[in-house]
Length: 114
Length: 113
Image (tube, rainbow over all chains, first blue to last red; front, side, top):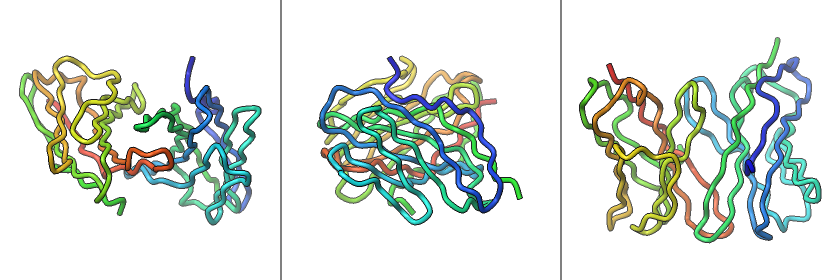
């Protein structure tokens, strides 16, 4: 079974609108972490946001928030007030084990339309 | 700047050749991970080292090898290169602990002609 599933290969959003990128995960480890990374066309992988499995509240970092639904094993990324610079590939990832191992999804390509 | 450095940034070589990619992790990070990203394969995990020891192996070809040195920097060796090895190779590092985050280097873009 896939550890991380991103079912949206591509998404479009109007500038200034909010968008949700879906991510589901699979683990039996009670302690794990969930991450989102952004990869613009320039190629670098930029860490955006982190959610720990024991965190009671959803993580937020500026315009990014992580909608963590533990029972459903989902960790969707919400980007509010989209900007043209948000156009990029977005990867969901999970960390489990000690020492840590990381698993990545196949990514979602987001295009922000002016 | 993630604090992870990779050299070189670009590498162009011919089929059959051997290259070495170098990575220096963030200060204090014990784990190093190598990934390959090609257009048709997405982000593929190759191998992980933790404090000098191999910890996990992914889809790494036998032609590829890696090591992590006592100063924690790591090298990825690619030999008998083929056209299909052209890709962006990322190194990432993390503390290796239960609450850590993985940070990526800028990548090495390898082109095999």
